[in-house]
Length: 128
Length: 150
Image (tube, rainbow over all chains, first blue to last red; front, side, top):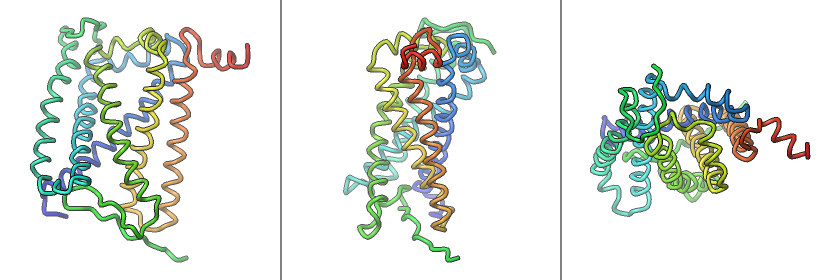
């Protein structure tokens, strides 16, 4: 469409990450609804989020959310800051850098319990 | 049957949609602004939510008793209700705009918008019911009966 320039990739990534986060939102509304069925049902059901596999998969959600949030700021700057469009490419690289830099510590906190490390001091045993 | 078409949204080469022209209807302009305003709200609401549920607490600690302690404070119920509402409207409005890139006929666009609105309403009601009626150690059925004095 635009010969693979950064605007095209930011548009595609924004759309894919948005769809992914929306899909999780719908799943998440269903899983929190289970709390209305009492502690046993709820704790059994959400226990799946503590498993190693789902921890790894949830990294995709975290990365999608972070990119979508930071690229959203970039879009708003292009829309409302008169000179914003001139810096759109630079801002795209900043968005990618901030996404990766903020993703890494969050990923550490999410994955550490798989290896028996609990940075928060409040982790249950991780079932694989 | 005439298949009336509307011009596609203008995609700028910076990867975002242009604000609808003055000639287009006010609804699309409202949608354009709402998308950005809800987005700013969600950046704060969703990122703080992720921080609390995955960083300051491990996800394995976010069990029933955790929610009960949190929901003792009405602030967190209001917080979750706002997050739920903005996220559903922002997400499904995004899906509507994405599908309109591929669907040109006015009838099909209306059908898709209606379907997405029904999905938003259904999930919003589910989430709202959960957030408002939650009482520790009461099931939803017991809480609803409680509303009628049982």
